[in-house]
Structure formats: structure tokens, C-alpha cells
Image (cartoon, rainbow, N blue to C red; front, side, top):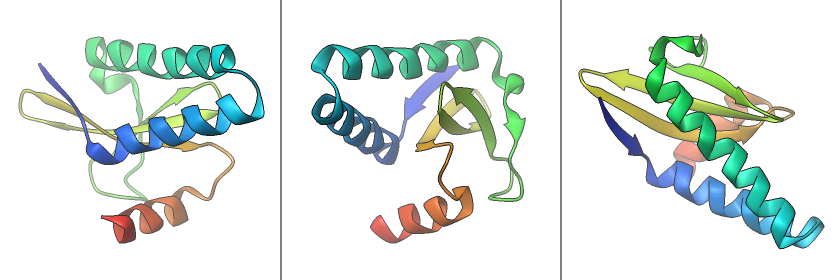
Length: 102
């Protein structure tokens, strides 16, 4: 199965890293990003393990990574990591805001 991280997800990881490196330390930010990205490999191995999030978008799945939620979709032969949002955010609003930024 191919694996793709969308530009939006890469930017969100950068934002998470920057926020945590300012709030705490570079080491804390690195550990957090490592924890999130390690989940990508778990999702790749078990792609159906994420909870369906069809209330946000058709075919969308969500998988937790600590306090963050990884949103992804499956297409024939591919896993697409689309977004990473903090779990405390209004997830529908986060998706709407992310679409406006494209």
C-alpha cells in the first residue's frame, strides 16, 4: 500500500512542532511529532483501525495520537494522511478552516 502525507498534514505537523518548541522545549516537540508520526506506520499496517468520521467527510477515518487526531482516507492501494488536529478543537470547524487555507 502506498503512503502519502498531504501538504496540509505536513504544514500542521510543522505548526504543532513550532508551538510545542516555544511552549516547552525542542526535545518535547520532537518527541510529540515522533509519537504522531509513529502512528502513521500503525495505520498503514492496520488501515481499517481508525474510526469512521463520515460525519465530517465521506470515507474519512480518524485515529488518535495522544491529544491529537490523525485524519486519513483510503483509496485503492493508497493511504492518505490528510490532517492532524488537536482533539480539543471543533473538528468540523477545523476541516472547514483547512479547506479555506487551500
